[in-house]
Amino acid sequence: MIDEVLVQREAAALMPTYRRQQVAFVRGEGASLWDAEGRRYVDCMAGISMNNVGHCHPAVVAAIAEQAGRLINVSNLYYTEPMIALAEWIRDHSLGGRVFFCNSGAEASEAALKLARKHGAGRPGVVALVDGFHGRTYGALSLTGQPAKQEPFAPLVPGVRHVERDDMAGLEAAVGDDTCAIVLEIVQGECGVHPVPGPMIRLARELADRHGALLIIDEIQTGLSRTGPLFAYQEAGVVPDVMCLAKSLGGGVPIGAIVARPEFDAVFQPGDHGSTFAGGPLACAAALASCAVLADGALQEDVRLKGAALLADLEGLVVDGLATEARGRGLMCAIDLPLPRAADAVEALLAEGFLVNNTSARTIRMLPPLVVDGEDLDALVVALRRVLGGL
Ligand SMILES: Cc1ncc(COP(=O)(O)O)c(C=O)c1O
Image 1: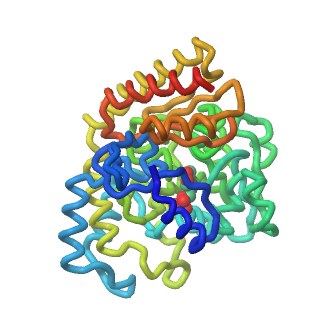
Image 2: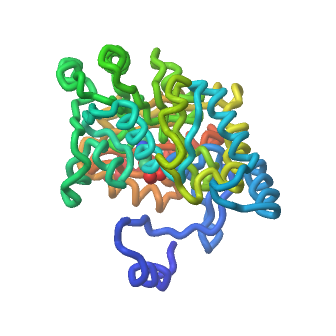
């Protein structure tokens, strides 16, 4: 399955920040990946929701190739048209205000935090959710409500408080006149696909309004049709002040962004924030192509149908005692296992030709490319049944 020499070279050359699955990929197309021996795998992770359009989508490949032959990057000292076109697209499909580009999800979290701190000068408090994930740089890590990821790197950015995703009284108590922002995901992805209850999200909006804080919604994993709508907030009954994007925005090419409502157009002024690479023509050309594919109503309807069918099948695993809970919104799904054997199940599924991941010892997450075939998802469920039954 994997060349041992490659494993040894990796171990000798890379800092061991990842526990990689024992497979190396050389080619991808749609929801299929191939290793060096030509074995096909069904990708049910989409690069952690980075490849919503599928691998090597022809429109994205063509846009990258065309742009790469003309101009790859030139920094933010100059105007380039793809950046402006992409900012217009994001603005017109979401909050109606201006966009700031960066290169990753963590950087989008950083930008949102800086915007909120500058807007709410003198009010340093930020409220985020326990189990939320917003990235691993210092500002983003400070928002991330997962102590195990934070503790080795203390002290973090001060002023951030975390409340449980269903603790409405806790949220009300935590937000006050010193709060500049409330940060949340509509569905918490990294902790195992846990939707934040609608009343909690609506309370966050109400409290942000009451205290003059910004409601920042992190759509880095949920965004770009992953849960069905273009952005998950669109079905949550709230409009954020700031939205964070990354992952699928570039169809696999690194790019992140924040967009805000028009009243925040002038918060960042020249010199306040920036990034050499950000918004470069290559990444923006890839993103424009990716976004055009993902904003399609027929694709979104297909995501809803395939997601509902997958969730029903996963609930069947619960009925049969192979899982204890199934959760899903569109093609963002997870199951909990009765035993802490999720890592073993992930390994066994890889051997069967399916890529999924475990977000904890008991939880398996599935984030297939949105273009995945229903038959591949059916085959995944058959493999899950076999693997979980054999644990
Ligand atoms: C909701 C959310 N926010 C932020 C991030 C961080 O993104 P990146 O890994 O691009 O820094 C992630 C990554 O998993 C995420 O799921």
